[in-house]
Image (cartoon, rainbow, N blue to C red; front, side, top):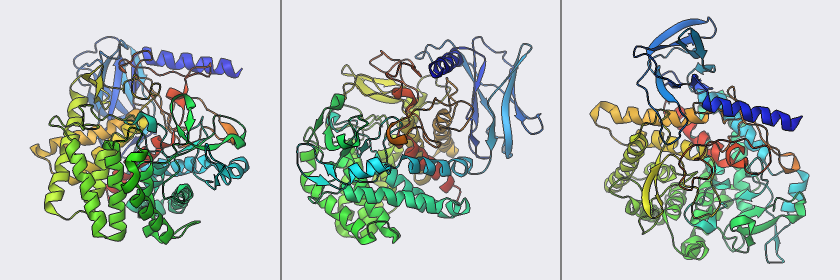
Length: 589
């Protein structure tokens, strides 16, 4: 019966992706003054004077009528649809709505959504905190194994209990899980911790009003305590607690990880392998004077020790022995938080050093280089983190020359993000990127499937939310010309990334679990873990089988093979979404 249910769901979503007309819309909602765009997908051209209606679902009355935009198509996706924008940004009245369009004698309607102040933060943060609470590695089996964890290739055992399971299908715990590939390392557990801390500090009054601050703070402290346990007596962080996908908890080990789950004793975290963001989290939370199993002083001392250790040893832990842009922005975040926490001139100079390193990676075209070669920086999860690190640094920096240099980097990066996204017809506004494929520069919607990992590619909802965060935070600190046209473009860019995650995508899937009208199926994992409300699935990818990431794909396979690429919840997605919606809410303070 369950298999039959999955087959029906798969066929339903396949039909949704290729039938029409369909109105694609953010299935949660919009703030009153935010950009508001739905997309109408049809097989044939609409009349030149075609209009859409905004319907109040309480009264069932039309409250706004707008003309649809011009027809667009996304040649790369080959979905056979024309897309029209239904822009109702000028409508600002709070309430519950849907979009309607009449074609011939047939009326087509969208999913329901709402317009409300701070809607995304107000409606979703409590669920995101719930998600992380349920992802805690705190079952009796996990706690018993993790309190006496064996290091790979050693007889030494350490206590690394706590933290969060990485995904709805993986109960391992990662600082970063693709270290061997050098150029694509994602920030995982430390990013979640820093994101929770950031939200608590950015919008405390609103969190208190919504009765979620204490729970969110407790979750942040839970993350910080885990990071402290992962700080070895030699002052590096243990990178991975790996389950080997074995139901037996005694199989768990502290490991380094290569492709195909090959494990090693290279478990020391470099700046880019979770170390930098772990330091940043501990330094930042040390200022709370509120703690769990460790004191504020221990958090700060741990951050200092780890930073000093990585200054001396980082390239030993980088798999290729060379620092690259990921080291730069993670170390910048670490040095910045230590500078903020201590006001020490040493960390001031360190933060400036790493900011200059990022400046040196910026090209004339506006994209960052990954290293000293011409390989562009692209990232499936943390594409916005270089900008976010610089905006955090500018919260402390007072030197005008340093401020000007950092703002220039941010401005160029944001202008590039807009340009590469809009250099083709792109009605959904999906954030595009530049990458190197077969030694040639290529712009595309999705990351290349043929990359340095040898196997890893998946949906990019974390990347979208990170770029939305970068656009929102960056727009707060740089000046604009042309009557704020660029500011409005960044607002729409950010809005469309979040709307894509929330259902305004060619498959009409809301990837925020138990929100909207259409979600992915439940995924279960060991020790009772699995999909949870507030978790976000990986999302949509380039076409399977296309090494350059071209085309478009979304699958919910029933054979248990690769559906994780699309449907699995992963902790960085909700962490970046949390940062983005926090930045929006903070923007209105």
